[in-house]
Length: 93
Image (cartoon, rainbow, N blue to C red):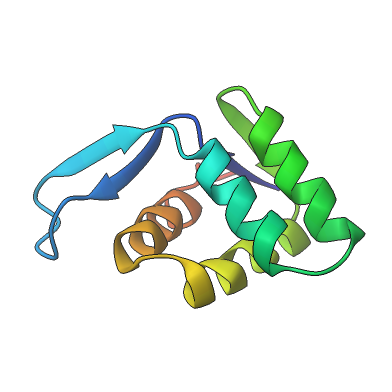
């Protein structure tokens, strides 16, 4: 499981990544899925993100779907923000 927070989503404001902006990306991310990906799983994931409150757990399959959709439809800043959340998961034993 991967914890992602789309309500407090952090993206860089420039390519140098020295400054960031934090905002609510739930509706934007949900719409990215809802409008561009076919299937009931994409619909369920879009609704999960739209209704989420703070950090939520996402399965490996959901994260894979998100990264694929982001690479096709997201801005580079969004892709970097998503990848940073994925890559900065707490270590578990």
